[in-house]
Length: 175
Image 1 (cartoon, helix red, strand yellow):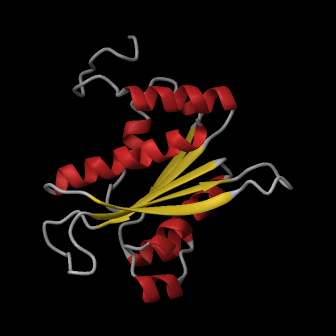
Image 2: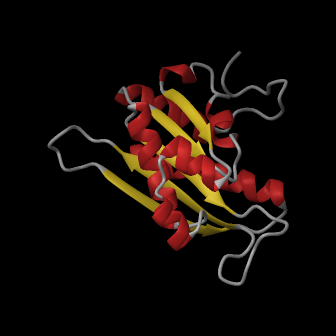
């Protein structure tokens, strides 16, 4: 079945996933994801593309602080000082999943999907997307960064937009 035809799971795989898959395959690169609020949605969307096993290594869902600490080694200090929904934690999540998996890229999502749990400082819809790249040794081109986003909508919309943003960030970095 061609990549752009509808599947039994609903609409056709989005062009962004196909472009990302082609680009990673062309570059011979791999990706792993660490997810909190998206609960595996980023990995699910990545694996909707036939042949994604060429570049997708793993997805780790670390919903609680204990899971972030245990499965990813996110520091207790970052969790205490900044909270799970923060740029420092998103960076640590992306870096850890990249390094643990031995992939070229690590992507993370952490945020507040709602409908409850938001505060004035950290409203419902606040999301941090982390991105970590392992460039060749000695190149000085490796990086870890996180971007802050605020999405409107219900829980599903916030999760969906967060997953989409994670894929768009990775696509922009590999292009």
